[in-house]
Image (tube, rainbow, N blue to C red; front, side, top):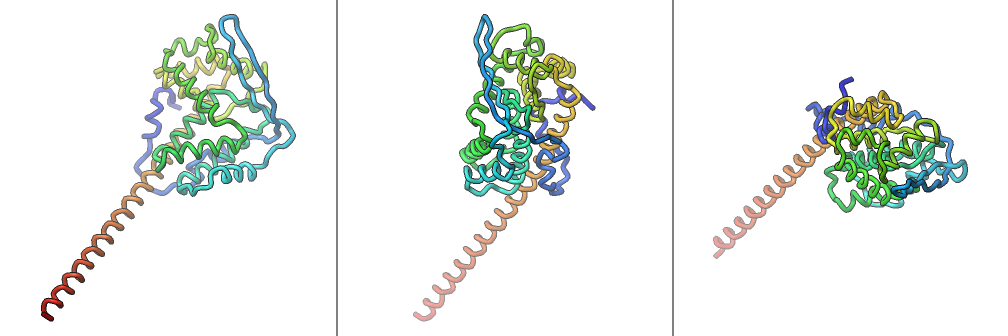
Length: 298
């Protein structure tokens, strides 16, 4: 596989082949083969770690065996929180994603972490790019995360925090986070410890996308940087490569679908304009004919 890190993140959305064959909704979402997750779950909160130079809080969310909602309940919570209709191209993706994220969210080893949040926010913003209303797009985001019993504002704040941190890094400092102190460095160290077997860690595709976003913002385009970062975090580089490839294909399919949607909307708009022009012309002819009849009568 060609190294994914050789591509910019924005370029992923421009990889579509110009085959305007309408893709099935299943291709527009992370398909079931991509997420073979188990579903034993619960919830608890773990707390604070600190260093000599700075204190930092690392929040872990994990499932418990009690009060675990079903997928249907999660979907219903989303529909209750956001009651307005969603265009089908977006709704198909969102419905599939919320099912898959429900399985992640209530997996026994699940822990919320900011890299996962960055990955999800990145995926969501890419998928919903071009949505007719910015206000509705954010309202859907809020409803989606709350349906999973998590905090949408925490997702946004953590994603922004990591993005700001990554912009201040270079390829070397990015992969050498373990030798420095700081809030984000502490988050990455905690992930590395848990992924290395010193705690529960649940790898996911959103986590892979979050890593790639860090690389992009740090201008770390060398193929070896992703390998070094995965090694520092005790994450399988092979899994990350595979998941980024699936994500790239997802965005490619979505770009094609949006092109089809735009073409359809443009055609319908043109038809409406033509009907309006024709109706206006007929009304003008009728009015003129009526005036001529009145003149003849005089």
